[in-house]
Length: 150
Image (cartoon, rainbow, N blue to C red):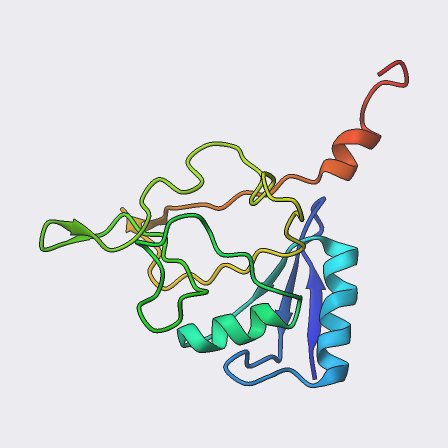
């Protein structure tokens, strides 16, 4: 059974009780979709996922739009892109500068993506502080916050 706990902020909720390494039941996926619509951003904690599981979970939301970089896709699961600043043997293992600036993913496509699924494998920690934030903006709240003349 899923438990969905809102962050109390403009966006976001934490989902517990899900093991995304296996397909969600129809009921749990329906609850996930409803929560996505209500909270905008969902965080699933304590997951151990293969690239195939990331792909399979992502496909529940619709066709996957792969990024433009063929070079940094998972070697066996081509729908999964790798974002990383790690260099091994003098070569980057992933796209290092993805998301360095404010952007909207896949906005240049004819069909704009519905959901982004991100799975963190290794998040940097320096001096006991977690680095590598991914930040989200609620454009509905931004619009509603505009002065009436705008």
